[in-house]
Amino acid sequence: MNTKTANKPSFNVDQLVSASLASKNFGDLRKKAKRVPLFITDNGNVDTVLIGYEYYEKMYQRLVELEEKEETRILKERVERLESDPALAISWRSIRRSGQQDE
Image (cartoon, rainbow, N blue to C red; front, side, top):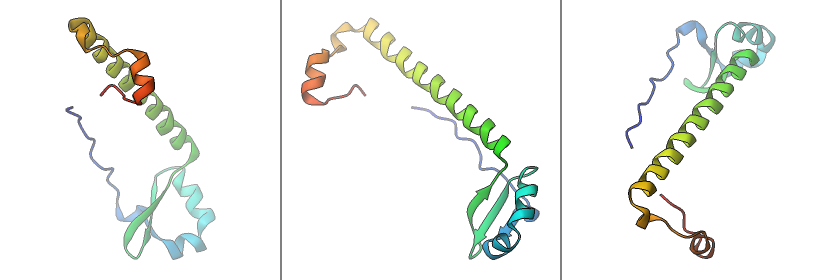
């Protein structure tokens, strides 16, 4: 399967916040995170991402849409494969007994 992977999000130094600073200034960071994602660091490594709820909702909705499209694509591909070669079909009874799944 050939899957195109998106690049990691980029961020600037203003978006990096140490965990100790985040714990001391959480209220201010919550406000800033509504405008731009913040990357909380622990020992210099990004550990947590703080984003506004509206942005989270958009990301989650997009993820659901993409999952639905992928499921539709997989099902369509399987139906086309079975239509072109019905001998590939496996009975439901044999799947239930063996726990086998179509790849």
